Length: 584
Image (cartoon, rainbow, N blue to C red; front, top):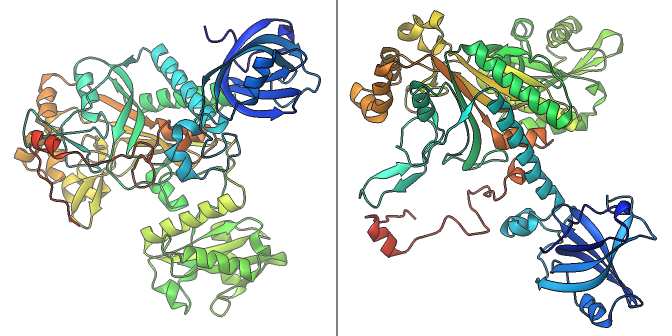
């Protein structure tokens, strides 16, 4: 064996033991007659000491040649350190080395492999295998492992069965773009990589596997951001003979289990909010409820004067920023500039300072008196010392802009504390959403989502008002999971395809296998999928998922470490019957 102990294991109780360690050289300090080396592995750091009065000359000489990240093996005796280091668990001991073997030399790394590194993100992505040696990344991957194991334990204890589904499937037109894979044995035909195992888990329900789960890779060819990757991992789950309440209880239980096991936090019951309420109160369907600043709609109290900007707006809406009446004009102007950025898109912003003795100072004092502004304060629940910020315009766009401002202020004011956790169920999503480009309705979730029975009569007359048996689980302003009760009746599924603009032939071509399966006794079923990458990052106190993925892609969808995607040679293209016509 290359080691008898790991580098985070030895303590004072091990003094005088003869041990063998192996690992990487973190750093070396050569005082001539004495050399100290920090030896690192996944488990920690142990200090080695080479002393010319106690270490053979050839070992001393070899120790002098050690560089950063050399892989070495040492044999020696555990001794008590004279100068102890309380910052590491092994800081009370060191190892007096008797034998030293260099297992592999290393070039000087392109960045320092320490918690605080001098390497930028691009260089660390290129040398990701070195970045993983750093504690922040290593600990994130170990944290992900712990979360994954707890998920498996919880679901297995509830009789869920883990079943693998295929990666090479059929392309479907709904949802994001598919990644496609050419078939050599079927020239001119392509597989698609799954955006989710949706249809397969429904087929498993038809097959009688009434509690299924899978921790599975999914693939979507879409634009990237901090919390999105082209390949990502879902905790995919499905259950039969259940209603929505059963699903919410099981996966609320899973989230409580994770919070308890990982952070020792107990949350007994998760609040629930309808989609309409979330949009009206917070401007988005995944609100962060760790802090206030709820929206106050002002149409009724702001559109009766001569201020044409408000009078012509579909929506006038504001938030009260606690304690911000003290903001200077320069600080307020900076916020106005922030909302006018192209990423937000507001044309301007009105403010009201709630000062002492129920006095108000506003950027629109010319149009509104103190009585008017008091009504604004009441609508936004503003108190003395608060700052009311108001946007106006088209309803959906304005809500989105104010939501972005609310989240920015939450970050600036330190209200989004990573060690606080506020889960929330958002329910009653719309079944369909109108797409201006294609001029037709699309499924807000997917075509297999069941409408609420009481809204069925609206499918023909007012399809945009039909609510779905769909639900999202939100944690700290991030959607960590979502799902729905599925359609399990063939006739209902055919009706849904019709409203989504599929002809009978198109529906049969794309989803005939599922429709056929429904003829053989499909049970009522539903499920939910967690985004494991995002869930793990939020539980780990982060907003970005990249450090919780061993080998992530960059914002252009590239793996800069292996330089992928890449071209393939003409022989492979010929074998796949593919001719390239790349647009310049």
